[in-house]
Image (cartoon, rainbow, N blue to C red; front, side, top):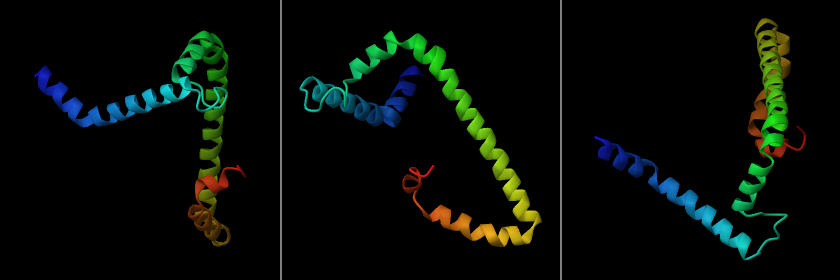
Length: 117
């Protein structure tokens, strides 16, 4: 039973795991050969070491602040979206005014909008 599960797991996720390991190995080799300056692309081991050294600051202070901002942004976007959707459904002129803008906004790649957001 366990052997079958392991074979299935490796068949399904083995190529992905191998790709991730090869990518990390290539990245580490690149960093050790100093092909790109460390301040631009540090080695994965250097990132891991720094994360362990700064874990109290990162996970104790910065992570809760970031999660709070993410939650606040999510709540605001849901509230604005529900209000806008309800308003467009209930008030036809609002729908006629905003619907074309919403359709146009969906055709623009998100990466092109990111500087404005």
